[in-house]
Length: 165
Image (cartoon, helix red, strand yellow):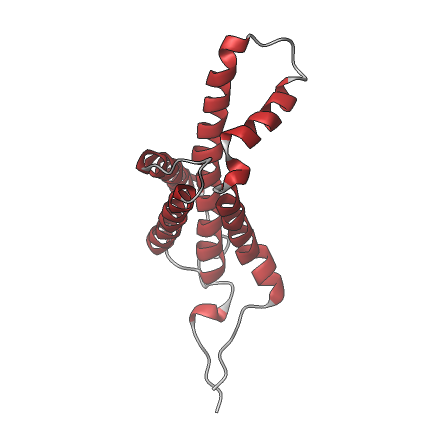
C-alpha cells in the first residue's frame, strides 16, 4: 500500500506558513510576549517619531498589543490555514472555513492556557474572544474575496490516497 504524500514544494508553499505562524503565536504567549518585553520594543519604535505625550503611552501600548497581537495575528493565522486547506486540499469553502476556524480556536485556547503558566502573563477568555473576532473578520474577507484558481479539481491528490498493488 502506497499513500501519496505532499511534495516538498507544496508543503513549503501551503503548510509551512501556517505551522510557522502558529508556532510564533504560541512562542509569543510566553514571557517573550509579555507587556514588559513588547513595551521595550514599542518604545524603541516610537522613539523614531516626534515626542509622544507620556499620557498616551499606556493607551498606545494596549492598542498595539490588542489589535496587532491578538486581532491581527489570528486573522493572519486564519488566512494561512484557510489558504492551505482550500488551496492545496481543494476542500469546499465551508469545510475549509470550519477546519481553519477550529485550528485557530485551538491555538487561541493553547495560547491563553500557556499564559496561565507564566507570572508575567494573564490568560483570559476575553483575549480568546478577541482572537476569534480576528478569525471571523478574516473568514468574512476570505468568503468575499477568495477565488480558487482551478474549480475543476484539487491541485494535489492528497485527499485521495492511492493504492498500488
